[in-house]
Amino acid sequence: MQTEEKETKSLEELEQIAKQVRRDIVRMVHGCQSGHPGGSLGCTDYLVALYFKIMNHKTDFNMNGEGEDLFFLSNGHISPVWYSVLARAGYFEVSELQSFRKLDSRLQGHPTTHEGLPGVRIASGSLGQGLSVAIGAALTKKLNNDAGLVFSLHGDGELQEGQIWEAALFAPHNKVDNLISTIDVNGQQIDGPTDQVLALGSLRAKWEAFGWDVLEMNGNDLADVIRVLELAKAKTRKGKPIMILMQTNMGHGVDFMMGSHKWHGVAPNDEQLSLALNQLTSGMQDY
Image (cartoon, rainbow, N blue to C red; front, top):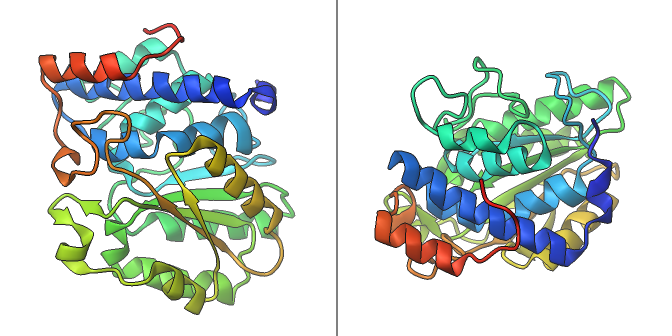
């Protein structure tokens, strides 16, 4: 069915969903002692806003996605947050989250398509590729006179991939103005702070110079995420693709994970899981 109820949820209800998603994330990564909790926790508010408020999407999933908005996760290593949001939105049973990264699971460490997991249209995690795919999908919708929008999410460390900048040139030149891309600007990547690994400079100046309409938002303030995404939707179909620079804290919501690249790809132990869950209180029923 189409998720009609997403438009009626209050900010408080969305915040409760975000807390539950963060609980899902730490449980999933702990359960298999593998995965990427830091970026997943940081991007939770964005994905909750997208699937429960912003996007026009259908849970009776098909690969073509005709007549609905599409989302592509380019930084596929933060699959825990995406899987949780898809399950909580009704794409598959919440109980399946317990199979994350286990043998024969549809919930692989990086999203894939051959398992047929509803909601996933491309295999991702090979960084740098997602923007090109999103542009292709957006162009397809324009050619088919499809009113749907295309959304994509990228890591800031991912901007060190050359393919990103080829795509960045292509989209404005071809007036791909039904695309809203977002960069998770948390300043961290697997090897350390981005400024130390390969400094990115002024992202606003770069994307504006490439011809994109650039917005900024606080990715850990759900109200601001909703406000800026709504503004971005209002700016579509005006000749330019849109890039949102989203400031987040890696590990947001769990104090001992916040702001450190060390939690990019490390699973919590039993004691750390208990501490994290105590911080992530939620009124929603757990699986």
